[in-house]
Length: 276
Ligand code: BG6
Image (cartoon, rainbow, N blue to C red; front, top):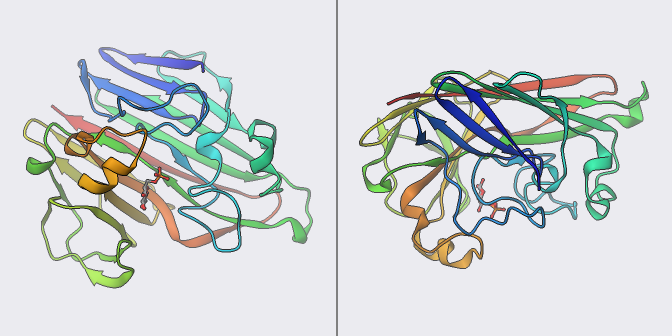
């Protein structure tokens, strides 16, 4: 599968056409993004690691036969603009979606994904268009997420700040409406939480770095995920020990569906900036 390299000074990034998945972002040669050594990169399945794009729904959608996290991460995106070394624009229309998945979501749409690299930061922006003619029956809805896998040197000395006071749902046991009490959110077991209506930028602290995650207000929620020991073992494309060197901090709107009328669009972006 083709991939594209972006450069800006001493920073680089790599994005695959398959799923428009960003698989690497290096600042001064230091990798910020986790990519499993078992990730399948030939286009036969979604890439395990990087920033897979979750669209048109997060998780499984009741009443839909589409797979978990939808089809965007398993589709072939095409290049719209690669004329600058530090910007890449990719596009997905129904033609790029595998036929068996397209049939399960037969709507008219276009997604544009713009990756812009700076010296210590990277912005990933998703624009969602309902390309149908003006016909009320052709309105559709979606949830969306940038499923960012951060590479961390050691999970035990990593924490996330900025979530104190935010309500969350525990996906593992379905408990809702809990409130985060910790200033520093650490991970010492499986975690799979949807934090709702997150307003502030978050910071991810490791021994050597501080990474700031900011977003536009069109993204409401943040999922924090680490599969830990047992789930890591159960994933064919994830090595048993790799849970120790990653943390997913995923910006999205997943609690409520966004309605999109024909001719309308929605846009959301995140910026990751690294202080090394
Ligand atoms: C996270 C979900 O976003 O993605 C988890 O909250 C899920 O529940 C994880 O396990 C990985 O999903 P997948 O489909 O890539 O294995």
